Length: 116
Image 1 (cartoon, rainbow, N blue to C red):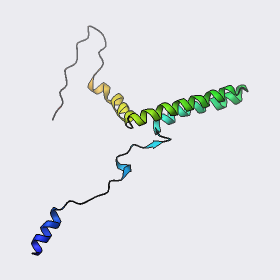
Image 2 (tube, rainbow, N blue to C red):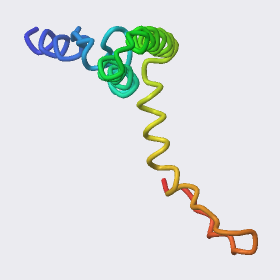
Image 3 (tube, rainbow, N blue to C red):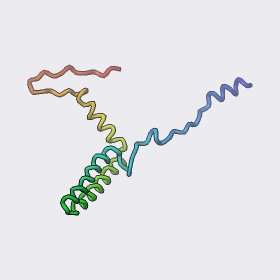
């Protein structure tokens, strides 16, 4: 009897908790962090321009721009949270998969096959 209980215990499914940090995209304000930092950081440049020129319309323009950037990035993150991660991976590896051809008369490179 003890052997059967031991084998049943080994063959039963265990319930393991998978933490959201392992599968959910990292978002801040509902947006991906890197594009928000790049595009939102450019909106902050309107503050020194506004103080330098003495025209607060630049600051208002920066706030409107920041609101539009956050809205668009939130919509993209809602549509696909991993959009920018996949996009940047594609941009970095594009030249290795599709090498550029210099001119029309230039011979095409050898085709590459995926190795399995």
